[in-house]
Image 1: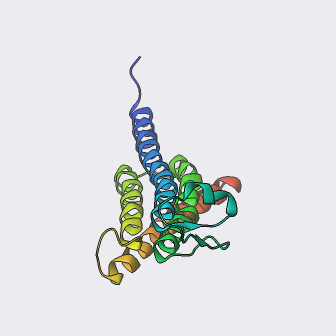
Image 2: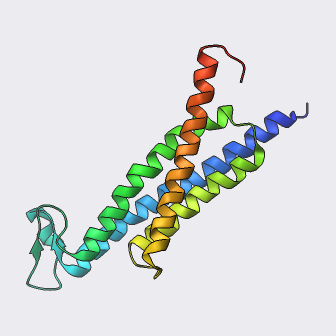
Length: 166
């Protein structure tokens, strides 16, 4: 039996969501690894237990707040920002996919969010040298996409709860 057009569309949408969610999770895992690399390179620790990993310089920076160096501060902010945007994206996008009706919207917004998130991280960590306006533009883009997804899902589910036609 051949799948219907609706089943094919749903399968495509879920594969797009799964692929880009995996990319975003891998990016967040790489940020964790990269934070450790920066801490070792700059000899910055946040607890005495970490002193055994530091062997390059005798002067080790102990900063109990977790910061201690501008590179560490930048990567921790980028990681925190991912937690604030990527996790809501990963929670609300499946809800949105159940009520979305436009194929091109899904094909644009999901990869658009992921690529904007990756670019924002690279710009924020100063691995990609662009002006501060790019960082603002990427951040606004992320919030606009996230707001759109959450709003559409909330409105459509609200109508479904009160049994009104959309």
